[in-house]
Length: 88
Image 1: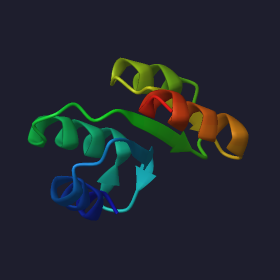
Image 2: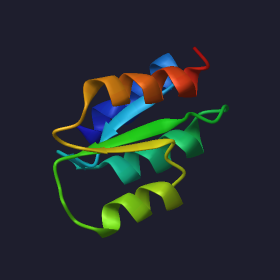
Image 3: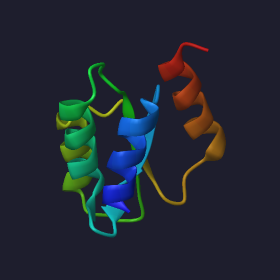
């Protein structure tokens, strides 16, 4: 849920956000924008999607995503992206 995602991010100030693009009450792009606007520090985010729309990957990169994964995704690749983003 987009509203819950934003409110949780504001409460917890995450080091990284994994965002599905298609969410109830909004979408991952909106959530990412709101988090970036409302938190004092930049929060990196990785988008996940089941959609095969060709423009979503480009839109994610333009939105500042550090990763983009289409479902089904390789969990090892996702974990590697998370670790690289967090500097682990």
